[in-house]
Image (cartoon, rainbow, N blue to C red; front, side, top):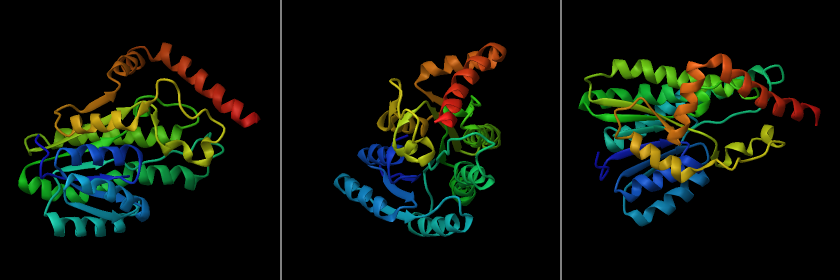
Length: 266
């Protein structure tokens, strides 16, 4: 897909993967809709995009709130009629065991990471189907394939996103609308700024830059594939887990639970 003059809407656009995706799309001449909760941060990103001479619209919106998403979509569709690329990137995690997390903390992750995606899709899908074109990119995580201690509720939200996308992809056949999930490993963003991660090592040596993931999102926006794992070599680990779960799961579970238990002792 040639992105010039296409309308690209990105949630969680105020920083990290969302911000870098906006920059990469704008470089290619796309018009950008920036969506996030923090108005000041959105305006800073919009200022950075001005040098690309594209149309920019900022929308302050908490995607976990269905009424806010409905109002945001009304504003966007009044200006552009439709979006060509919808990037559902907004998401966060709270680290902690299920026994320690509150129900509200578990629900909040599902509300943003999963239902936020659903709300955006439901509001922008009709216009995509009407014009028989468009692509949805859902930013998940390798945690969509591995259930890990300490982030069980986050994993659940990403498992849900991947499962929804797989079923939905079948429904979209022959409509002209596509859907692709981008699943990166650990990314160097403010994702880990939540207080629950305070005692954890922030980034591993193999963690990715947000720009690397942004480039994968551009690739996904023009891809027939269901899922793009970043880096691609990690697809082998997913295959191993699915093929030999009795071997891989105990290794992963033990290593991640060790980290969780050590934090509880501190």
